[in-house]
Image (cartoon, rainbow, N blue to C red; front, side, top):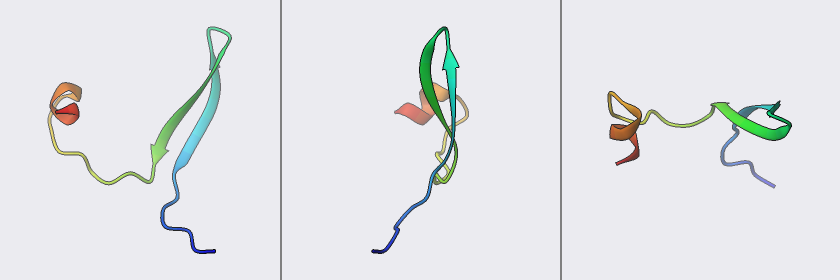
Amino acid sequence: MRIKRVFSTIDTHTGGEPTRTIIGGLPYIPGRTVVEKMT
């Protein structure tokens, strides 16, 4: 088996709900704001 990409994540609880935040492993996303990065 060959791994193509590895993501670094943190699993937490927010307001009693489980959440997973990606903290690394993604390529750079161009844009100055979150809205610019989403479009």
